[in-house]
Image 1 (tube, helix red, strand yellow):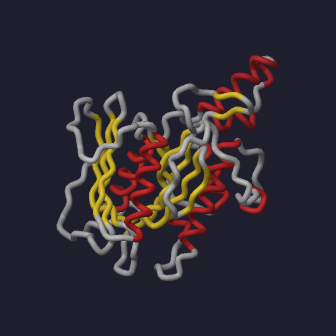
Image 2 (cartoon, rainbow, N blue to C red):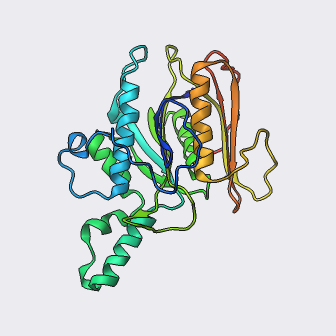
Length: 285
């Protein structure tokens, strides 16, 4: 039996600020993630943490806010962190850690590469830190699909949950290129982390329903409507977050589409729970 997924919580961190279950502002706030003075200290979330990379710290802090918001929902079914998968989309991947490790070798010599930095040259290492810090015990993976990697991960997560291969998933996108006072990548003008908690729907849930999702690779994919004009990761992730928040508070059905210059595309249709049509939908992986 097909299980319908819902989007139960949203947390977004951009150069303009941090938002949890509220629509993010799209104003230009610079290139790097805005300092989050109210973020919980890593030592309070993960007392046994070693020396995690700044990207891992940021992800842990935002994922903590995401799960805390979900657990605070008093009118929802109980939630088990151990059943949560982790699947994040990224194009920059571990660029910041790669650059940091390489720079250290250049300045100190090949025999003095930092072991603590080298660990984070794997794109999935920061996600593993989330699992350790927050008690998440599902599968861990990263996905890349050009500039729409973030919303492609949401589509993949919805597919996984709908077929019963998972109960819940932290998905979304992360683009991070900050190394001290330098930018490790010139691919994007702005960094962003947008996390979405997708769960298997039950009758009592009053969250937006992922009614349809599709993703693929086709350079000449037909033009959808409406279309996100700016195909940057920050734009597509912010649009999806805003739609999810809006449909959590009002009736409607909305579509978010993203495509990258190299041919990757993803389309997600969200509906308020009142508007959810129980007719069968067709999905592609």
